[in-house]
Image (cartoon, rainbow, N blue to C red; front, side, top):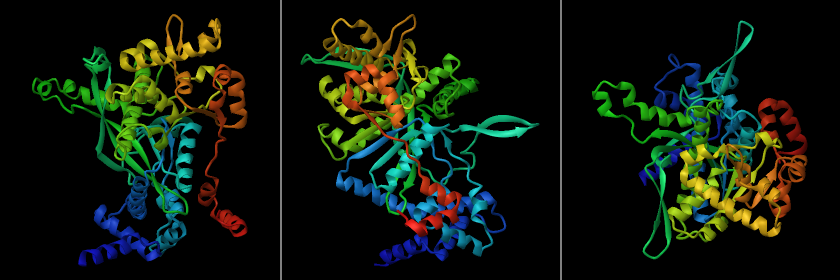
Length: 502
């Protein structure tokens, strides 16, 4: 009884939405979380304390939301994106919690301005344009609509570059957005997955006559999860953005260290952690191209394994998988997820090709962002085969079966076969990632009515003729109301007074 009373008191103390509760929580974090007082606290400390106070009010909802999804065995949306331009979280979270005005008034009581604290938050620039902003808006909107949804991506140590002006010139420098810590993220070391690179495949015939493929002699990297709460506006739903950080499978080689080779002792750690070091490394050189491909496979491998783990908590087989998981590919960067799901279903869970492919196509959907043929992602066959030998085998098998179907529909049309093939022939063969995403998905959408129409009429016309039922449009939306609340509160208040908060 005493414990429950204590819990209720702590709950009231720590998560009340009134000014007094907010101030007490703010002061508590400043003293007990940051070990600071009013004499030693920096402006950044004040920002951290306020952010932790806001996060407290999200955590209980966050846990309850996830429990609700499990109890309901809900179908979940999994949004895979290499970019999330989520920006600053404090103002958005205060607005979504409905305590923006109360917080601002509470801070005024102790002679602090909310606007000053907000400026201490670094911009989480895990993207560089519309692709990443769309992903962030979708997460916000799905939480506002109370849809069971998860975002997956990479926890880049360096985000999009920071701009400074020196001697009347623009200088670009790395954005160290994590240098002073991040109050919104929660490390999940128990959610770590081994990601494999390089090596070779070994084809075996089992005693019962079935074929089995093993991927052996690989280099390994650990993917560790960091979670961000995404709270819904005007409700109690809190969804999750899970970002993966690369860690070495072997932190430190003591043998090299003892022999004085200090650089070699930490070489594996440095090479492994380069994967999540920077958003879009320079791909002018081979090493930069390979690192980008490593990034893409790293995060989809961790994500698909995590999705399967969550599904298997409540299910013994994969028959219901497409009814419980919808995986959306935000452009072609995550399209290796198709081959990774096939690999896991066939090689590790021992499903037949036909069953695995049916499940895969029914699970994936693909958002195309560009009309430019040169912007559609392509990877050299030699590079992909060296880095991911099993995945290249799966891509070739997908292509063989797909072209066989096309040949039946259009006999003798070799030019059409060449145009739709997943492999672009030439002196240097390339894998067409957009073609993989289209063939491996049940839905393909553009991001505006005009864009989708031009895709169907021009760039993807062959696929539109072959698979017309897969093409549809989803016009991009933005979170206008939340933006207006932050940018111009007085105008937002006037509009709300006239038309309500809907």
